[in-house]
Length: 591
Image 1 (cartoon, rainbow, N blue to C red):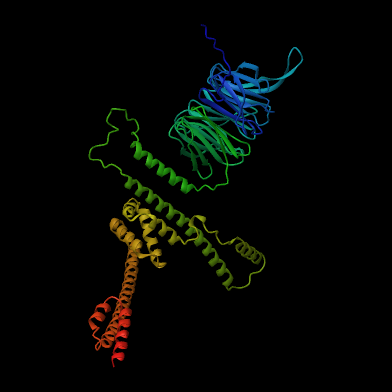
Image 2: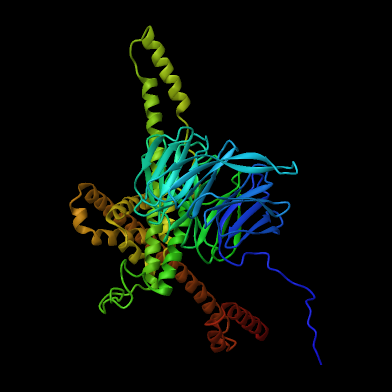
């Protein structure tokens, strides 16, 4: 017999079969374009459904054209491919570069875009209307101008004002040119390895660049100076984007991480770890309330902004704890340049192995140091406020001849400005309504007694001396003395030589000794009073018991119930009294 097999239904995967290399958002943030090997897909942001699947070349970059009806893709072979989304058909294919087309950036005037490739060319394209033989109008591309560079072009970016074009090169430099004349403007040196990505802030004052050297660099576009170089990722930085109308930066790297940075304070705000492979590209919504990341794990992740507050100190603490747990699980990282089997990665037999308790102590020490830094800033704010108040009082109380003319006007203006500018500082919410001493004391008290000494050992001398000063505050505010004295004694012994060389610290230690002795004497007197009170209550209780005992015995002399009364008196005086009363009644009846 012949078996007939026919296809009844086919289930196709909506997602990519290979790693996704680029992601772009439409101008209204309703569609997502992703591209990779052999496929480009259009997605609906709200539903997450795949709208169109296009058979394209190996896409490395792309963008939506104005109107969101067409997309253009740069491929590994140097082609520029334009597609119409509604019909899912290719409108035009142009051999734009002789090598790989690495990057594309839209002109802010919506009249064209710029591309850069491995053929060392930067090309500027403009949109034009073409008509077919049937007279149907369609969108086309026209090469407007081009510029030859000294090395391969890996990334390009327009400034938001359309004034400059920034180009990242294989020779680890970023070159900035005027867009209209292509005249050279700035050259930014600093990266040690090729530039992988660049972006310019919306106010066109800052440029962020990421490279294969794992660094994120923040540059000023006024003079071309490097504001800060940050170690951003554990592998190459593959994508960088400014959030609209801010100086916040999002970076993605080959270490599977997406990180959020403040380019003004030069600090990392938070880390987003959800991908399982290299993160290739990031796209940010125009409102800044959403971003999309794509990875080599073939996933597309949409991140939305929430109303939840983010505390940088808490994020740093979580990151440190996660890093310590990871090291405890897999062991320490291999030294740089160590080859497997070379022996450089092997610890000597006599080297101590870090235990979980050691790492907990390090985390506790970090918490103490962060708490002292917060208190230091808060104390400085209040000192400045009090100094301003004192200066104003001095000006009020100052008795001198009444000035005339311009001097009088100037002093009156200065006094009015002083009154307006002096405002009471807003309490730091991190302190949770506590005083500075109470906040640090609670942080120290939260450390277990077993880990407290190890945590104090890990403190650098700078923070150890600060904690000694705070111990005075603990005693002044009558906080529990045991943790304060324990910390002060240990720090004084551990840093004896440095303390002896500082007159200020010697005075602090002397003051701590006198205050601790006074507080200990007070506690001793209090304990003595409590012990005396307890003894007095015991004696009063014994006297009361003896009174009942003798009363019961006298009442039972004639009745012969004394032995029973004595036996009961040791357990329950009430029963003895009752027994004695019965004996008395019995004696009255016998009489």
